[in-house]
Length: 287
Image (cartoon, rainbow, N blue to C red; front, side, top):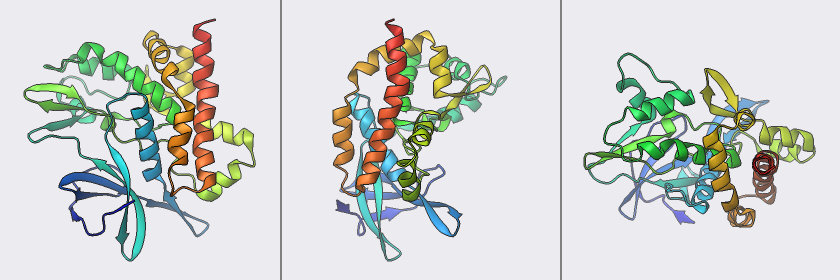
């Protein structure tokens, strides 16, 4: 694992709720996420394991052939302690401008404020000029949604979608920010206890809220699949056959910094979402 302790780092150029630092590694710019202390519970410090979620989530997108931000594990000495982080390559080229959907929502129509309601998102994209992927966006949105289901991403909000302005035209950015997938708030003790209660394990794995609303109603992943919009059915039909659990297991097992129990947890939670959501509704399509 690359040690970036002596690499040049600068004031963070990136927003979001987690601790992020800007590092230059081999002359390339990276955003590096480290574990963040999020709560103190019974005097035990709980860490946000977002660096593992980011790495696994983004690499699953890559396995499924999505254009995804490159990421790799690094280590760094911070305040006398060695910390494991995930380094995410900055994908912007010189003169590129990144516009997150949350910022687009304030500027496309002065008479309306767009929200995280799915209908609003699609309406907003229709107003974006010089965007070649406009007609394909709804299909792509639901394809991303299927993968987010698999990895249990609860935070694909408008700040985690973006377009890039390049040479006078807009294009979708690569997939980025998967740090809220795979239950990053669970401690090692939480994970251990779940293995002793399979009913609760299943509940934690599959009963997850999405970042979206539909007709002004908060929605879980199961809610969306029960409704099964036509575009979601099409996306599931496309993405499901590409899911290779053997490759996903190898991806997780090859992460040396994880304990065996963490590896088993990440794989089992993905397997449950595939079995109880994706498998179930994919089979219903062909009944």
